[in-house]
Length: 328
Ligand code: G3H
Ligand code: 13P
Ligand code: NA
Ligand code: ZN
Image (tube, rainbow, N blue to C red):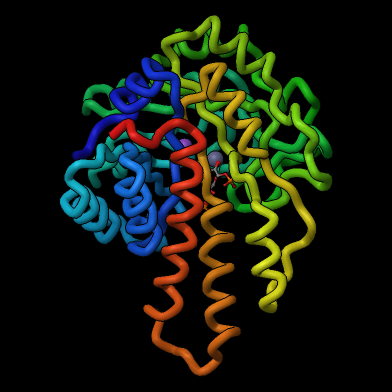
């Protein structure tokens, strides 16, 4: 059944777990998440970016969501818009059956330029009024994601935000978070706490303490009713990189967010954990391996099936690790 982000995360908060939010762009990714959810009895957040919506077509995506909820009737599903950039994108997502939207006003509508506080509050407040009138939840974002290592901001298109960012921009300010939630009424808040999007998060293997745990803790203590969201939460598993690279791929050495760090965040109020890159790596690893092993194969099902299995394995691992398993 379809449920809102608020309903899903209220339950997670009450029981001290988090829900991974997996990006989907097509049927195979949707089925992979749902299969893993069914195997582990987990509630799910499926999220689609603006890029996913234009890739898959809004009507096809709406049909897919409807089909998945009917095929897996026992699994609570929240369908969420990832990184909405304005009122219209959020409104059309709602028209297409999304039960939750993210209004990312931390950046201007171009999705690159860091926005000031007043811009963020104004657009997020207007989206929240509209969405709540439709019974839909809202995630806002305060602070710009990017690497504390390099000071480079990041965005979904893979290009850095303009210029080098200072540490205070890369970590959400707790006082501002309290004001922002009061000013906008969002249900969930994405905060900048040391992660960045994509595969290239850290150039060295992290030895613990990747996340700004003091920032998470303080925001959670002061906003106990606002669910905290961690973007850029892929772990970038070394075994998946190795499979890709040993079958003709070329992934530069890189490290992601260790699962144990995410588990520490969950102890301090993180309830939604965004993961896209790990599933991209999983599907690509399986497809490369299948095609290299059997170069004569050309039936897409022959490589998409192992791709789904490898993606489902990543999803199962995260459901287990975040305490989502058994909660559906
Ligand atoms: O944060 C961005 C997500 O990984 C979605 O990426 O905009 O390429 O679909 P995308
Ligand atoms: P990753 O690139 O770490 O998977 O993050 C995805 C994300 O935050 C989507 O909003
Ligand atoms: Na999101
Ligand atoms: Zn994100």
